[in-house]
Every structure is written in C-alpha cells, then in structure tokens.
Length: 68
Image 1 (cartoon, rainbow, N blue to C red):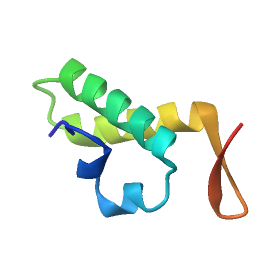
Image 2 (image 1 turned 60 degrees about the vertical axis):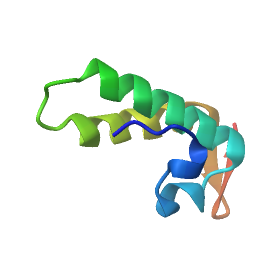
Image 3 (image 1 turned 120 degrees about the vertical axis):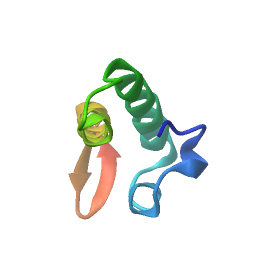
Image 4 (image 1 turned 90 degrees about the vertical axis):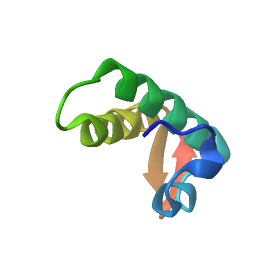
C-alpha cells in the first residue's frame, strides 16, 4: 500500500529515521510499489528498495541515522 505521507509510515520506520530520510523512504517506496504492480512480493520488494534509497544518503552511526 502506498503511503500518502511520512506520518503514515510504520512506527518502526518513523521512530528511527530523521524527517528527510522518511521523505526519501516514502518516495522510493511509492515508486517501487507502483513499478512492481502484479508481482506477488510487491510490498516486500518496495520496502527493500526504499531502505536502499535511504542508505544511499544516510548511514547508521552510534545508533542514529545521519547524512553521509
């Protein structure tokens, strides 16, 4: 299911990512979800793609996500 905004993200994502990273996650997830219509693992694939998009600009340091 696509997300209308970062406020709609699961708590596990919202609690850990800064606002900008959440926006990246939403955009990547929604795009991937639309691109993989009709595939059985659509949602799981969209989550993997969204996390990969976040990891391009952010890294985890001392338990927090920070810009690279």
